Image 1 (cartoon, rainbow, N blue to C red):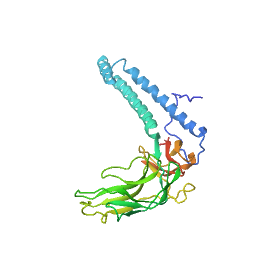
Image 2 (image 1 turned 90 degrees about the vertical axis):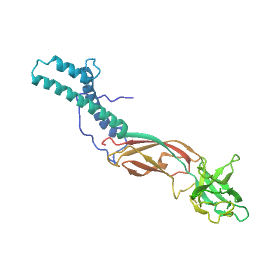
Image 3 (image 1 turned 120 degrees about the horizontal axis):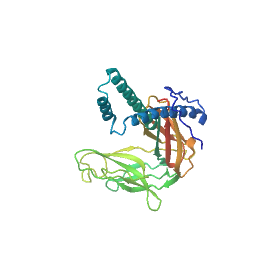
Length: 307
């Protein structure tokens, strides 16, 4: 693999701004990379000069004090010239460090994200039981997860809603989970708990304060709000593709380039064209998944060399 070599004699204060219409080819990137490495070599040369100017001292301040003492008998103009040279070298060294840090931390950022893709094809409607206290019934339906569809049996009195003896309303979730026999079943989270990994959310339940078996055995005052995500055409088409937000270090504009690499996906195939940046901002972007796959792990790289 060929390397780019920096020229310490060349320094440029500008870079060509990359456009979205530029071809994705090394010939597009390499001229800018060459300018950056030339600048780094130029600034590194000055940084080395600063390091040499210390002459083994712990820092430049100590060296300057030593020089000031040794030239006390010289003219004020000579003293000022020497100090000016050292200060200029310090300024260039600071610019070199700032340039390297900006290139590493802002102009080129990277990370990894995980996109879950689960929901319902149809059914799984909840209702309050009239035959068992604080229980929910669910109609039959079809859910999707792990890149495939699963049948869900209709069940009565299959999910118990917790009591809330406290003085404030609380919120819990009704969800589907896959048991040890690979059967998808409904359940409700305990108060203060989250859904287990891999679960499919279905309803948000608002339980009023003081709502217990004694005060509300058949959940009359409990509010059920559907949060079901339906994809009737799964796996052929997704009406509401899942999104994942990514926070980035602040850049000057949102016209940066994003490069994605699908590391792994569960179930259905997931090509790189299924991962789309649906929106961009200077402090982050949103990725949409247009695939039936679940648990899609994506590595991303952000590039904005003109930042």
